[in-house]
Length: 108
Image 1 (cartoon, helix red, strand yellow):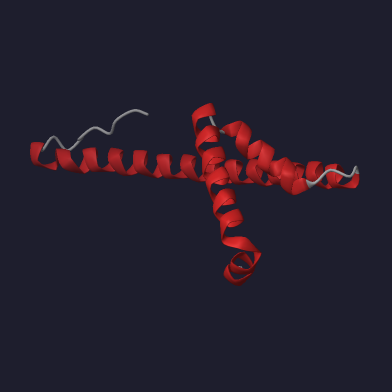
Image 2 (tube, rainbow, N blue to C red):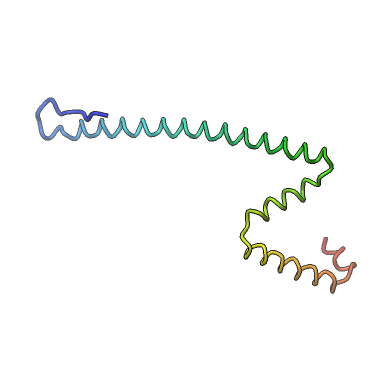
């Protein structure tokens, strides 16, 4: 984009040309961001639809979708995070076993 020039020649009016350039750039950036946002939203919706289709097909084949989602979530974690989660799960399981079925049922 070419800058605007102060054709009046008055140095005190230079800010007008600078302000016009800034306003045009700001407007152009806003339009670009809006376009990118619309594209992003469309692509995200398409991906979500595809994900729903995959899970529906897996369910139709007899897979447990909740377990599949859990596996996907675990694959995104590193080994240290998985180990920490497994340790916490073991701790809670031991606490439930020690509490007995009556106390666990009351807590639920």
